[in-house]
Image 1 (cartoon, rainbow, N blue to C red):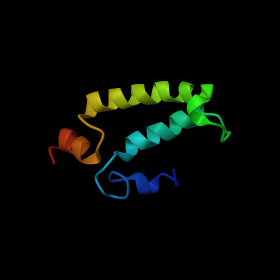
Image 2: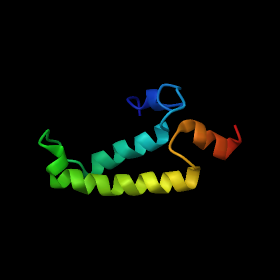
Image 3: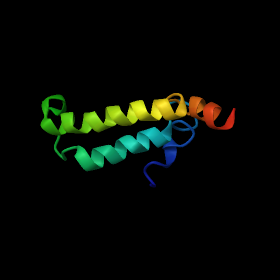
Image 4: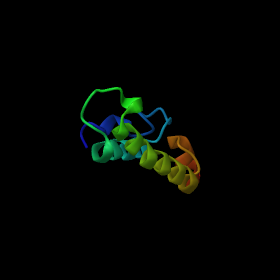
Length: 79
């Protein structure tokens, strides 16, 4: 949680990519990714990680209206 503090407000309060979504990606990586620094794009762990990450992205966008913090706040709070 401490490492993710600066994700708040859309990555350092810029309003860009939602920190909640990025936190979800971090959790996905903890569950599915390998610990190695091998050629990630061709590794099975990379493919296994990207599938749920892409599903999370689609579901998040559908539920909150976008991936940017500003879009999420507009959809949830009207601002």
